[in-house]
Amino acid sequence: MPEAYTLAEQAALAPLNTLGVAATARWLAEIRDAAVIPALLALPVVSGAPVMVLGEGSNVLFTADFPGLILRTDFGTVRLRDEDGSTALVRAEAGAGWDALVDWTLARGLAGLENLALIPGLVGAAPIQNIGAYGAEVAESIEAVEAWDRQAARFERLDARQCAFAYRDSVFKREPERWIVTAVEFRLAREARPRLDYAGVREELAAQGVTADPTPRQVADAVRRLRRRKLPDPAVIGNAGSFFKNPVVDAALAARIRGEHPQAPVYPAGEGCSKLSAAWLIESCGWRGRRDGDAGISAQHALVLVNHGNATGAELLSLARRVADSVEQRFGVRLEPEPRIVGARW
Image (tube, rainbow, N blue to C red; front, side, top):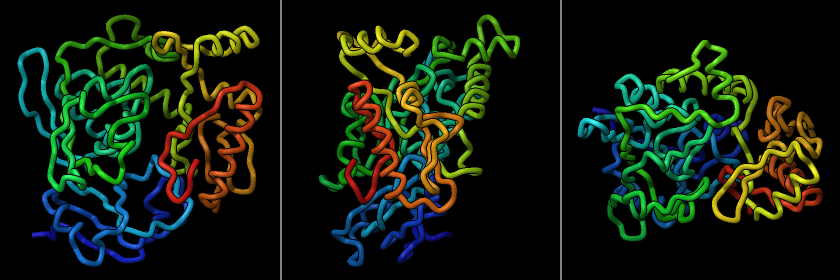
C-alpha cells in the first residue's frame, strides 16, 4: 500500500513548471489522497508556512524560490455520478489531466468541454483560472467544486455561484491561501450544441470536410489542430501558454481603437464593454518574435512568453512588463497576466 503522501525538502522546481524556470521549494509534498491534507498541513515542520498548490506548472511564473510548502495532487479518479437522460454529472479529482478528462467525456457521448481540448494542466486548476478557449469557459459546465478550506479547517462543496467565476478568475484565484481544490463536478449534455463562432473553428472543420452538424469529437479535434499549429510546445521550448488576458475595456475606448485601426479585433463583452485581442495589441507594438537574452516572445504567437534556455523568472517578468508598458503607451490599454506570478507583484 503506497504512502498517502511524500514530503521532500529543498525540491527543484524547474522540472515542475512548463517555463522551465529554475527555483526551489522549501518543502514539496506529493499527495495521493485528499483526506490527508489536514494532517499534512498540521505537521510541525510545515505548520504556518506559506502553501501553494502546483499542478502541471503550466500557468505559473516563479521569480524567486518558494519559502513554504508546495502541494502536488496525485489523485485523479474520474467517474460518472448520475444522469437524467439529457445531462450527466461527472466528478473528476484534482490530479486528473485536463485533456484526458475531455477525452473521457467525449468517449461517453458527453458535450460541453470540446472547445477546451488540449489546454494544459490538471482538473484542479481549471476552476481556479476559469480556463477558456475558442468561445467557451469551464465555468459554463461546472456544477460544484470540492475544496479544503484552510480558514474554516474543513472540506467544502461550493456551487457555481459560490465559486464567483469571472473572466479568468474565481474565488479560488482571489484567495489562493485559503482554498485547496480537491475535485470538480461537471454537468454535461447528451445533446451537442456546437459553438463554432470563434475565429478559425468553422474554417478548420471545413478543411477536414465537416461543414454541418459537427460532433463534439470533431470540434475537439479541430481545436487541437488549431492549438498545435498556433502555440509552441512546452516540450520543445519553455512557455506557459497565453501570458496575457484579452483586455475588457469600455466600449468607447474600443470604438476609438477600431476607428484608428479598422483591422483591430473587437468582441462584445457585456453592456458598455468590449474585449480586445491582446495578441493583436502586442503584435502591433512589434513584439512578436522579439528576444532579450533567453527571454522572448514566441514567433508563433504574440501572447506567449518563451524561455529559450536559461531565462530567469525575473528576466521573463521584466520582458512581460515592458510589453505591457508599450501597449499601454500606444493604445491606452493595460494588459494583465494570466499566470500566477510567484515571488513578485505584477
